[in-house]
Length: 359
Ligand SMILES: *Cc1c(COP(=O)(O)O)cnc(C)c1O
Image 1: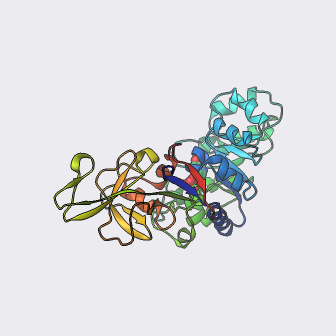
Image 2: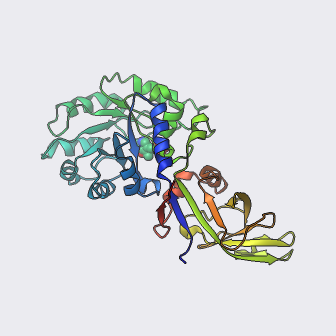
């Protein structure tokens, strides 16, 4: 039998989450963000499942877009950071990709390149993230030049990105929103990532751009009703491959980090940081075994973890284990490990097979 570790993908959950976004933002078009291999879920699998349900896809770079086009996906695809050099423009035109224009150089490249067909542009303006985007006082110059340009396909979509939409107590979003509205643009506009979709309905405008929530996880600091209705697409699962009794005072694993306070029953599970389980998950991080929670104990190894199953019943060699997903929230595991769920799923390596689950 093969090593039991898998990232199971539930595409019914994905479709359910798309419906939640549609209900939440009924008037907006939906651009599904599938960058970074669809946050580690597998870009081709996820995009194939989404292609008839969404209005466009978004990726971070040309290579990610080409992977989808080569897989036969013909949904519009936006390059969120635009092109990284002039030579990518003919390719973007040929593969019918949409591009972001977010700085002067990208505009100049477009202006001096002749293309087989015009490219749909998204003009990104900086409203306070201070990472990408043209300055607010220059937006109209960019906008008008793009409108005139034969290489650009009509009016650009004006967009910006929120720095703090996950925190409803921060006033940063109001500030970004009022700056964006002051631009007085009558063309199509877009602001919201997942947290914006959930918490900032007044910012939905013409396009929403969720990623994380489509995969079923809550981006909010404090979960809302919508967050609780999301269903996780990925469950990272494995099983128990060894069980032993250890005496009180015996240590378990590398560095002898955990010492049994009592006679304990310890299960070894075939998952480790080499499968994307975070090495920084501390003792006490919950693991789900046969519907029961048990604490991780000691160091996370590359291929294994150890779990205290002293309190569990009907658990033995071969018992299935869920590390996160159905029944155990990714965000809780991420918080324990001092990170966010985005990082955990996007760091699952290729050795962990993605398996589409029966539902
Ligand atoms: C990644 C990204 C998103 C999606 O963010 P989520 O928090 O995953 O919903 C939206 N817009 C831009 C510009 C992004 O880079």
